[in-house]
Length: 258
Ligand code: ADP
Image 1 (cartoon, protein in one colour):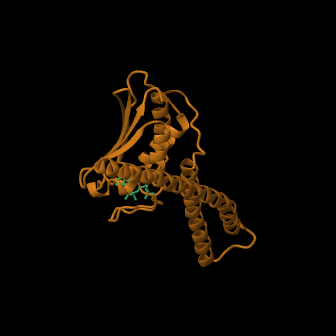
Image 2 (cartoon, rainbow, N blue to C red):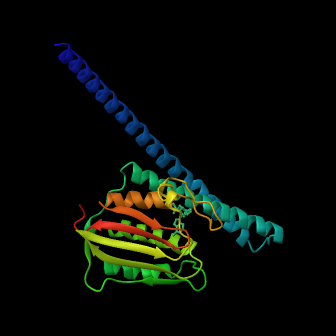
Image 3 (cartoon, rainbow, N blue to C red):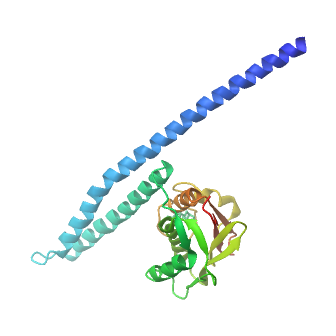
C-alpha cells in the first residue's frame, strides 16, 4: 500500500510538472510571437524615413546649380551608403520577423526547377564575384517538378548563391539538383574558406557572423531567414563544410510540398 501511495504521489507530481511545462511553453511562444510582431512593426516603420534619407542624399549630390565641394560629395556618399546598409538591415529584419510570426503564406504551385535555375543564372550574373570565380548552374536534364512556392524558393537559392559568391575568392560556385528520396536535393557548393564544424549551428542564428579574414559586409540574418523559408516549404536546410574545403549548403524539398 505504501508503495502504491508513493507511486500515486510521484504520478501526480509528474502530471503537475507537465502542466507547468505546458504553461511555460505557451508563455514562451506568446513572448516570441510578440517579439516578432514588434520587430515587424518597427522595421516597417523604419523603412519610410530611411528611404527618404537615401532619396534626399541623392538629390543633394545631383544638384547641378549648386555643386558640392569634394569633401561634401564624400560626405553625401557616406550618408547614402550608410542609409542603404541600414535599409538592407531593416528589410532583412522585416522579412525574418514576417517569416517568424507566420505572416508569410507560401503560394503553392507545380514548379519546374529548370525554370528557376535558368532565371537564377540570368540574375546572378549581375552580382559581384571575385575575378576568376566561376558560377556553374547545372540545370536538371529531365523535367524536375516540385510543389512549392517559386518566389520563396528562388529567394532562398539566391541568398545561398550570394553568400557563396561573396566568400569565395577562387574556384567555383556550383548549383545543382538531384532527386533524393521523396524529393529533391538542391546544393550550393563553393570552394571558399569553409566553416569550422563547431560553427555550423551558429551560422543559422540571428545576427551571427563567423570571425575571420573573410568577413565581408552582411547582416547575419540571411541564413536564419533562408532556413525559416525552407521549413515553411516543408523542407530542410543543412550545411556541410570544413575550413579549407569550401562549403555546401543543401536544401532538401519534398516533391509534393508536404
Ligand atoms: P551574412 O552573409 O549577412 O553575414 P548569413 O546569415 O547569410 O549572414 O551568414 C552568416 C555567416 O555564415 C556569415 O557571416 C559567414 O561567416 C558564414 N557564411 C555563410 N555562407 C558562407 C559561405 N558560403 N562560406 C563561408 N562562410 C559563410
